[in-house]
Image 1: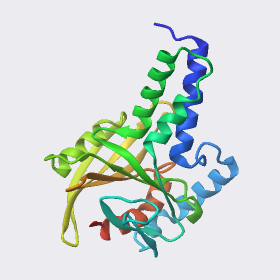
Image 2 (image 1 turned 90 degrees about the horizontal axis):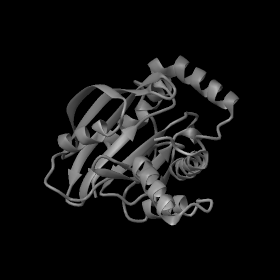
Image 3 (image 1 turned 60 degrees about the vertical axis):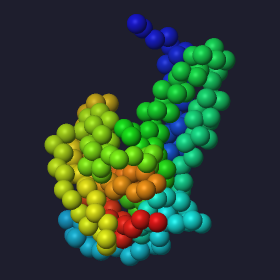
Image 4 (image 1 turned 135 degrees about the horizontal axis):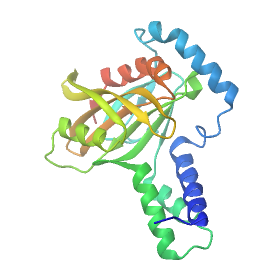
Length: 239
């Protein structure tokens, strides 16, 4: 069935709105020269930076921090954390209609919110922006409801929900007394026709599962940000 032009325009407008909530309105409006410069810098330094420990910029996850989570971990110096309010984001999308019938608007809002705010068994809870540190990407935290499902199963469901994921490689890790599972994989964007590396880790807590995901503009950016991901993994603790 063909979709009307007005329907498509509303969908695109709502996607942009909700994407702005998730990215702090920064990713979509990046200046092209800034992207090019940052990517070139990341490409040149990726090999050395990926093995270099970064300085901690503080801990998030505890009560009173930028993001209150079932876990705590250190974020890299100059990275900025911000909580994601899924309820507010969904409302913002729903309120962005242009006079469409309520049922159609609600359906679109829910579809877009589900696509951007939820992935598999978890929902977006926090994002840590690398831009102030000179990179283009986010360390995103996703949380779920308490259950008996183990971390590997949660992580597999998370990756399976990301259309375009392939060549997954899972492994276990320890951080203090905590044991988790991580995955390295490739993500291919059908829209951009590009493939890039991504990483994610998962742990389970009494408050529910937690997934921490690192994407990036491209593979070079991803590799340049891996020290921040490794810092989070190394300092991960249950609150």
